[in-house]
Image (tube, rainbow, N blue to C red; front, side, top):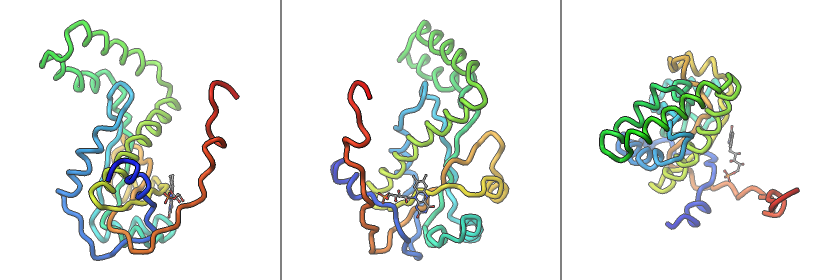
Length: 208
Ligand SMILES: Cc1cc2nc3c(=O)[nH]c(=O)nc-3n(C[C@H](O)[C@H](O)[C@H](O)COP(=O)(O)O)c2cc1C
């Protein structure tokens, strides 16, 4: 499948075949592509918690108005923004190996770390939250396309009870649940593509 075919083939699954199990290897290859997503300063803000445990999926289903696809999916994947990503320590972890491998020199390393320090210091609480959402949104789209590439279907969903999900899955405070993605093999009936606006309805060139 080329990208145009992949984009056309991805639909939000209505429901999943209940007996389909996904292995760690399935997830590993999906995440190997997902990790190529862009992120601000390459700080890679997005973390995932993959729930395959049946009892936990049932509990997640109850927290989301009983949407059955959470139960029938092979996994429910909690997508989280990591508040500790926008820090100098995280930047050093990310850029030190590049310096040691001589991919960047000392000057570029210092310039980059200084820039990230300024960026991190200037982030207000609200801006950090927006940064997490922005970065996670881009990341998780990679995840859904990667899943489709390897033959798995997904459905993105809001998290309706963040505190409940946090407690159920022991999610630490620095990780903010952003979305829930159900994943597995879709049942046969594919939801017809919902109406899409014409390009001219949502794109302007140069000015309004
Ligand atoms: C933020 C977000 C939340 C969504 N929540 C749900 C949901 O709770 N249940 C559901 O069945 N689909 C959910 N969807 C899927 C949308 O309904 C779907 O993407 C849209 O109708 C377009 O269909 P398509 O993805 O098949 O093109 C959600 C999508 C997004 C982006």
